[in-house]
Image (cartoon, rainbow, N blue to C red; front, top):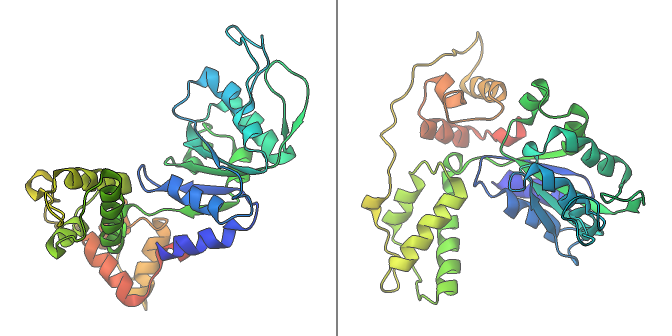
Length: 305
């Protein structure tokens, strides 16, 4: 996670478009907010929009606005997100869900910094810094003609890959403490400590819902806690099955040491450690074993992607 934060610091002061990639719940919006808050645009509120949460027919109007009478039901003028985000940042979440027919209009704004409201020919200039995020494989979508290649390259100026929580267990105790104290303050609870055994248990879990799932578990625990020590109902939490090392599908090449082998496989898997197509599976190692070896050998997978 340290390398991700360094990338955030590097790109924040520029106006470059950022594409945040990661599974659902990995904290993509938190990273977008960090970029905005560290930028020269932080005196204005960041505008956000979830492309997957809006019906396709309303998405264009929401992004670019419309004039009165532009379509049935348009009884008043509406200011769109790009206009609202002028001199600020616009966070487009789930950009991979944007309909193909709308993608050229987004591309135009990125290229020309201008657009028209629906129902109007008046060109509106805008100064917007775009931060986009997705949990989808945009490269594959481009190959399958589900996403425009020219838009992909415009979005992919500065990609930031957010690893899933299961691949950064060292972050879990810090996140658990931060969530506990934040939620306790919000709910008026006086909780000031978390048992070490609880933190170890949380660190060993898989967290398919990532940071969002961890926060939900902590909130439930805070609600149920009586006293000042966090009480986590461990039997109610699905603990992972003991890992059995899979059969290796790759072997070291002649003259290749352990460091070179792990680096090669991580490059071949685009930095993915866990899962059926991850580096751990291909090397015949448990996920935790591979992460431990990477730490020992000083391998930073984010630098290899």
